[in-house]
Image (cartoon, rainbow, N blue to C red):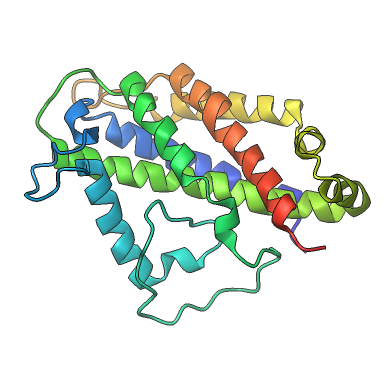
Length: 243
């Protein structure tokens, strides 16, 4: 039986991955053209941005390696190929038939691009390929954290108080589910921990060669995007979970 403290420990580890990915992206300028359709430099690509092209190519390879057989690894791109290798996973405690019922990647991407403007240096440095490479790594880390938290936290909480959750699910009460799932004191601890980690991870950075990110900006992204989307994912999970 997976316990809530085990899930919380996993989420703590994913926090550190996200922070490192954001620091890596912040070493490059915002480079706004990489998010603009038709500005990729690829011939015959009038509708996709450089980020979109880099993301789908990364996910095409990931799909062939079996990445998206893992429940919390939800793809940003549709129409990906099936795995080319056999993937063996431990039996999951999750009870969804289709994990894409909890796919929040569109919302993650829509929130991430404006976020770049807040933690990357302004302007253009010409490092377009490196910028989108690190964008993809950051997006995948953020997505994994949100979807892991959404599905596993929801399942553990459901098992701990099944009658209350069944009543809310059967009545279609999304607002009630959100209230039942929300723990303001836990959210506050998460944000305090994230702020501390941003300081700690950058404590000995050589500022002459490495750019720093503002812990307040990362904290606000957690508050305004990661935590709300995780809770939205929890609600979606429960609404699609069979009795």
